[in-house]
Amino acid sequence: MKASGAPFLDACNRRETEYTPVWFMRQAGRYLPSYRRIKGDRQILDVAKDPGLSSEAAVDAVDALGVDAAIMFADIMLPLESIGVHFTIQESVGPIVSDPVRTIDDVHSLGTLDAEADLPYVYDGIDATIQKLDGRVPLIGFSGAPFTLAAYMVEGGPSRDLERTRALMLSDPDLWNALMVKLTGMVVAYLKEQVRHGVAAVQLFDSWVGSLSVADYSQFVFPFTREAFDSVRSVPRIHFCADSSALVEEFHRAGPEVLSIDWRFPVSDAWRRCGEGTAVQGNLDPVAAMVGGAGMEKRVSDILAMARGHRGHIFSLGHGVLRETDPENLRRIVKLVHETTRQRR
Ligand code: CP3
Image (cartoon, rainbow, N blue to C red):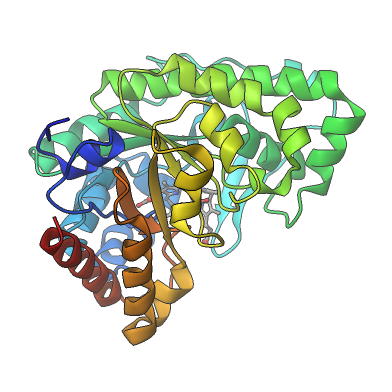
């Protein structure tokens, strides 16, 4: 298939690209001095709710790094506010939910997202970001996946192995189902509205679903993830999980064009296990990007060597950029990936 012009979208669609495109999860974040200046002493949610600032943060990261895609500046927790979930995002900890879900009444008391009326600042932020990008690179929209949002709502905050969530699933499948139905409806409405505002691709962050067995994933999560992907078909869809090695075939079955994998297994394994019909995003260890130097460069080259001969590779980290990362290391990665893959085309 011929190229369309934007390497990131071409790679999502497994078209030929001039070079392998690169972007980084959390590319607009505190490791970047210009982000810290934009943020000032505001909370992250105040930045996300101000379309001027959120668009500036998203576009600034593209300019600072030379990456091939922008990601809208928001947080996976944001739409939950509109259905009545109260939370804060605590520095260096993550989201803390004040009244975790315990009973079916807790689920019944949740509202429904009004796609157009709720979250106007997110959609205004998308409009402003697209305008500021002026066609330079495509904008990625995103949502938390139903499972990862449910996990925060059940645990009340970050948790290592999600014991409460897994216990709830097994002990009260009806409650679990009701919660997932509610969240899937919200995710679908949210993503559709983002697409209506012009995002060029969508990424579903199922960051914590790697804590499940394949059997429990298939029974308690898969139908909802698939429904979310089925409902948004007009743009490329990316599935991300932070610990994806055990479940990658299941993620592929859920229907996304792109599998975004962590660093724990070779990129080539994703194609070997799921076939050449998928694009693959990843998968440098964020710690390597933080450490920099020859160790980082060797790992970048190793990943490019493994991806060679496969169509549809998007270079990225296996998870988000770490706060201690020198932006110079990320610029070096972008240059190295572009130069190496341009030469061998
Ligand atoms: O460039 C970008 O990617 C920025 C947009 C973005 C943010 N959060 C802004 C943010 C995106 C795509 C997210 C997704 C997100 N948020 C995920 C999925 C990706 C992943 O990392 O698995 C998750 C799990 C969250 C929930 C969340 N929000 C966490 C775990 C944290 C980190 C807490 C900390 O302080 O380390 C946040 C806060 C957050 N969201 C920050 C940013 C830039 C950092 C805090 C800040 O700037 O004040």
